[in-house]
Image (tube, rainbow, N blue to C red; front, side):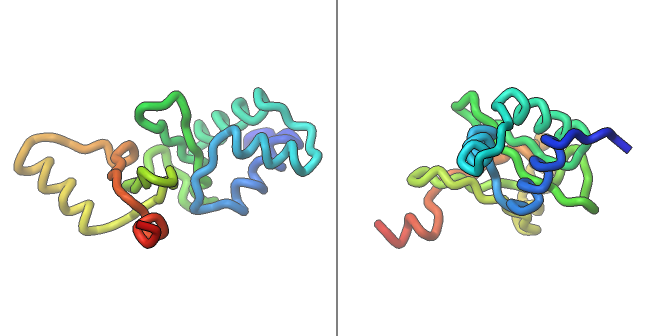
Amino acid sequence: MPYNTKQMNVLKEYLEKTEGEHVSAADIYEYFKSSGSNIGMTTVYRNLEKLVDRGEVAKYDLPGSDSSCFSFIGKDRKCKKPACYHLKCESCGKLIHMDCGEVSKLSDHIKEKHGFQIDVVRTIFYGLCEDCRREV
């Protein structure tokens, strides 16, 4: 069992509370800073990378940006590459995790008929989220 520091445990607790959401290292740092916790940005990055390496957290690189976001995978679903797709709102920037059998069929079709395998972790569909569409 891997050794966990106090900072690692606090970070894991935060990520477990935000399971299903995508958060950046800056989001995490700001949360701890605003709550009076003395966890530095370097510590956040170091511990996030450890959790990614352990398969407890998924890391998503955002195209056109130097940023990444992270999502807690779950205690019982540890894996290096979860099969999922993402939807990115071009208006508010929200990144939505999507696990959809219909899109998986499209991925299978592209592989079978076109000889191209999609990286299911890095696939992002761009458009407008439901909230932003209501505002238009």
